[in-house]
Image (cartoon, rainbow, N blue to C red; front, top):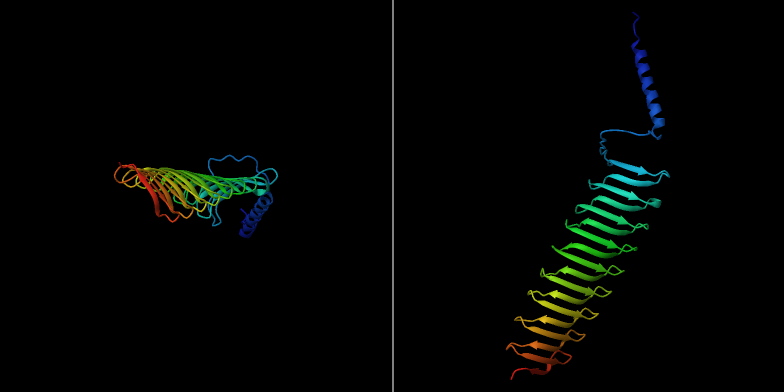
Length: 250
């Protein structure tokens, strides 16, 4: 039997490996056809594990992978590589986000920063137009104008009672209807400067009353029930001092 030259064997093996490496390098961008597997595990190499899908034009359409914070997400893209949707991990938990063809936010559904559930809508300028969800522990529905200022609030108030409030284009409250601090019902109106102009509801002691105010916030009129249980009308001057009154007492 002839002796095998060890150097020749090593050189042959290394040459074969180089050939396979060269072939693999030339074919790495080619279409491999259909791949059938039971599972694929993608590991984080420090830059994050991900899968990117492209259309026949070579434009990116999907990106599935690890986010900077360590959570997972699926992002979709439209023309010009603009983001159209995101489903995955947000600041407070799972979220679904939608975008218009201009790249601006159109919808958000998921967890808020506090971890509660919310639904938000936006106009074509990215300004918030609607909010439905949890606010300070209670359920609310809020609407906003095209400048992003709140225009209406319907839901749970500070006293944990039901309420409806409206606002002008500057964000100043113009009306409130709902539950007062003591648990009674009330209706309040406000001027453009945010000061009260009228109050109709329940006063101290559980009696009904109507009050009016001038633009300085001074009460100008009172109609309701006084301490004795009878009716009373009071008219004040512009400084809020009583000027005329009449009671139903006989």
